[in-house]
Image (tube, rainbow, N blue to C red):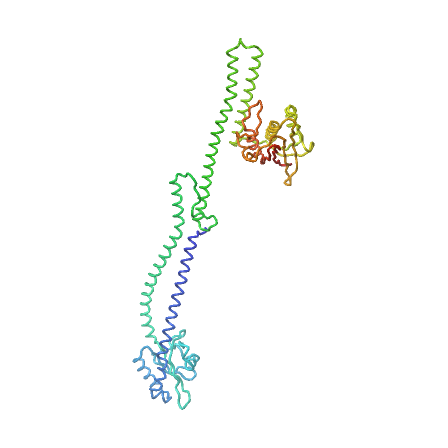
Length: 491
């Protein structure tokens, strides 16, 4: 299981603290011990030489085992912190002040002895402890001569075993006190560090909580903005959480604003459609009431005319209601696609043939370039025919007599086919191009005819193209005509 950032920092802090504490304790103990040994050795450095000079037996260079033992015993009583040994020029121990069986060594390494006799600057110098095979201690040493000939050395251990035992007990008590003091100070230091760390890590959480509370108190209305602790690139989990909250709140705000905008658009659309429905419905009702109230007074010609007008209004009403339902289904995502491969040329020729008579009535030329091709596309043929019909119908309505409508098919670099439908109509102003795909929007250059137009055709066409994984685009200039274009997958 991966550890959090706080856990990694806490463990690292504890490990670093323990390592530093161990190094400080070891360094302090080593420095204290080295300094103490150097001071004691320098203090008693000349003691062995004074003893050799002051004792007649040693001063003459004579060796008497019993006399030396008595001398060493007397010196031990006077200075219990010292141990005395007499060694020959080769380092062999001849006499000592210890009891029988306490001395473990029979020989002393003379290398540190000679080093101390040559120079006393680099203190402390430690030598072999005769009572401990694996231990070395500071010492004082003096050569014993007889008639300028070296007889041996007076070797003094500074800090006898008795002294070490007493010192160890005292140091143990002092160590306990020092450890207690150190542990207390360490706990206080660790507590302060942890408090600072907790403050540091909980500060972003506090800011996050405060930010969410302020948003809650505002009723989640207005601009939510970005939380102050939000940083998606940070490795801090709290800042990442703040970033996630901020993005979620911004997304909720956008969705809320979109819902408000859609609701407003629906209200306007409903009001406009109600007006559009009321006009043919009122006309239809008026003519039917005339026919019903005057069955005998109306001539056959008037009766036929009123009936035709009623049928026309009913057809317009049905067309408008069909468009409303179609747009509602598209926006609700309730439309299913039946995509298949089919020849695009055949569909375009069929759609153009459907509008040929309507175009001839206005002397408008319909053309397809190239006129013959064998491109296959993968799409819903019914939805595509609906889009093409809407676009051609709009083009005929907005193109003056004697104009032209041209459909051009071309290949793109992405294995797609581009369809451009261009007319020589009145065109659309640049300021209105961004709104022509909105439901119920009609450009200022829109032309009217005998049929009812609710302004839903282009909105339906664009939503159908989006379902076909394409997009309906427009280019236009006033007085120069309009071009609608989209792309289809080529098989």
